[in-house]
Image 1 (spheres, rainbow, N blue to C red):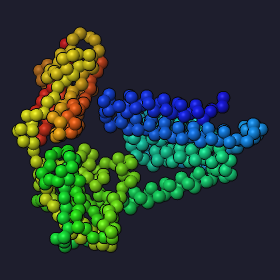
Image 2 (image 1 turned 135 degrees about the horizontal axis):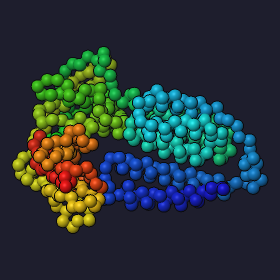
Image 3 (image 1 turned 180 degrees about the horizontal axis):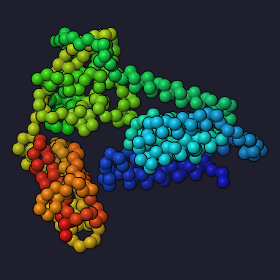
Image 4 (image 1 turned 90 degrees about the vertical axis):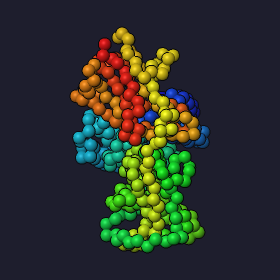
Length: 447
């Protein structure tokens, strides 16, 4: 069956709209994993849509049916490039991912086999490689995952070039991917400076100042836990700069080699490096030049100093500093926080404690909310106890903690959902702010 270009165009539009209404609809579901999956689906739809347009143009401008017949009968030969890439993927999987469970490694091994068995590069092999490559890179970043994604791009370029009868399409596509990969690797390696063999000196320049901007866009010196802080330097001259955060009492908290460099041009323009780390959403680096967020150096209450360091060959010169503090919420702000359990299908959704009735499957979700215009952050601690209040640390639940942050829109934020018929016990959702338990929501399944 011959695939028409307009089939791909219509399919891409339909899937994109369905994705927009389901996984991509933040009003329906909003968490990090599903958001990334929704992004992957949307990206696939865009690629399929573009491919469909190219395929339609190709079919429209094809000269004769005889040429198509000749092309169909063209002898298929083994592609050495595909075999090498497939073997590399299989070898990398065994080396870098051998400790991962089979459901994670098996699709990657199949990707290698798909490449080896693909004599003529085609759309279906590309889509399989792309889906696997994008999905595995969501969960963990390893060389074998990158190789699968790069092979998908190579496959796509080769298919496009072959469709327009470009000779040596395999070699051209491979070279293009190698150049792309090399440029991205270079960009990643030059995003940071190494502190090895770098001498730190101090020469404060009074012309330079540092403003600290909160995630609300306000300049401040006092911030709350898990609320973004973004330093902005003023009055800097041309050169290469990085930031560093130290405790006011001494000791480096965020080292300069964990910050993307800033390149200040002679005309005052600033270039922020870090394209790759932004795409990959890398943790333990000051992503987008910010910090004090989950995964990007959340700070405990205390006093700190952010330093601006100018890199001059083997010397790092501290040219500006700014003091700031992470402070606890005041009682007035804490009094505005609300948290509750919502039961799906139950009109009375505001429960501090809910007892499961009968053996029917129930979906219970913990929510936290703060008024519009401000936000609050904290930790939700989830665990199960018996009827006497003893924590079941060895249960399937264990004791887990995760941070949360409300939005400025005043909408409730989902913390955790528990559905079905869980094991008997009392499930606790402790809302902890500044180290203090402000809510203890309970879902009783002990009967």
